[in-house]
Image 1 (cartoon, one colour):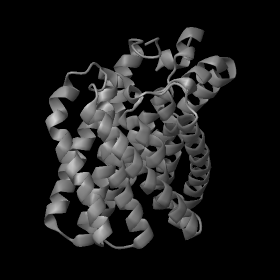
Image 2: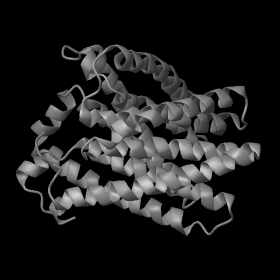
Image 3: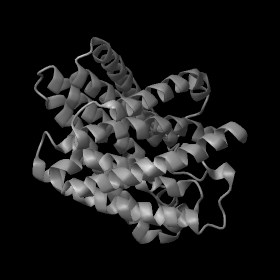
Length: 323
């Protein structure tokens, strides 16, 4: 990690906001691990350790990006004005929200603090990003990608821990915003994928983000409603179909050279894994239990592979460079 702690000005300038997607993936892994441990009566230490590591990584990345903002403000402004990179700014607030969920079995006070900070920051970023979309003079259809779901996904995630920390109306507000604009953006993204040129190589992994909104929506609905009703099944079934739709795309994913966008595989897969485990827990159906275990094994392999490849890229200075 020396290349992260010894950043020269040029490398600091190119330190990307998308790095927070790694925290999202690791936090999702922590939540999935906690779910497995709770369902099987295990100690919970592995999930807690993953939470602690994810929180530590967030602190390191946040410190580096704050230094970048303080010393290279023009580079941050350039990222914000970029038609693609702007969508990755909410990965920071989503990371806080996911950490608040992972903190629930550890300490309710820590969870509340993380949730409050993450929710407030995400609401601000959602308004600012969507205002940029509305008042744009530079966006074209080719700039649209599934990364545009990031502001939406964060809103849908808020109720998962929010029902423990705030009045129900606040959680319903965020769920409604997330669900409404998920459907709007889903239409736009599908139109772009069906009727325009394929996504550029570095954005191809973001197709996996399409799995996140219905998976997170299912978990949020359980937190709000408390049961697997018809709407919950609709959300889960939507996620399951998107997962099946992504399987034929695996050869395309495998051909892409490594970049931080690969972390887009991790959080959506974690969300679908936790949703499947929750289905198993609530319905008692063996199929969902077995599917959840298989998905968890796949998620673990993905997280290990991404972590190893990212560390290698950091050591060989393959990231934090001009694109």
